[in-house]
Length: 136
Image 1 (tube, helix red, strand yellow):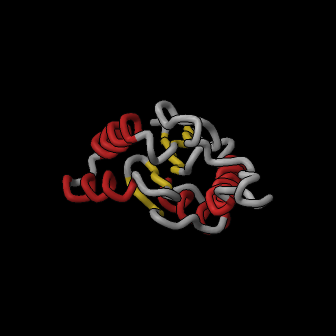
Image 2: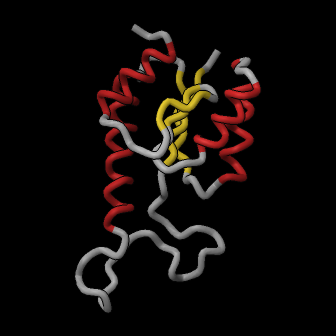
């Protein structure tokens, strides 16, 4: 059985229907030279470090990785549900996974949320995912 790891972080691109002001990057010269969304960029970069660490550590395992924007609930919620049901999680845990899984910084393994609301250090994420997958 293939495992799936979902990493939830904002994308640095225009989102459909968000208008010309919805982009999460760039410099707003009217506000100064500082990036308008520097805190978002920092979180994106930290999740990028987690992604690269997980890919490097689990490259030979049967794991699919997906990076998902938390605003993409139309894709995210059904996929968390599908993975959790396929895994056989109890209903209460499935509901908790859906609630916590749509948060910035969530890391979800086969429908179970390991982290939510904060981005862990790469080594912490690798250890947690390896443990969840039963990989030594």
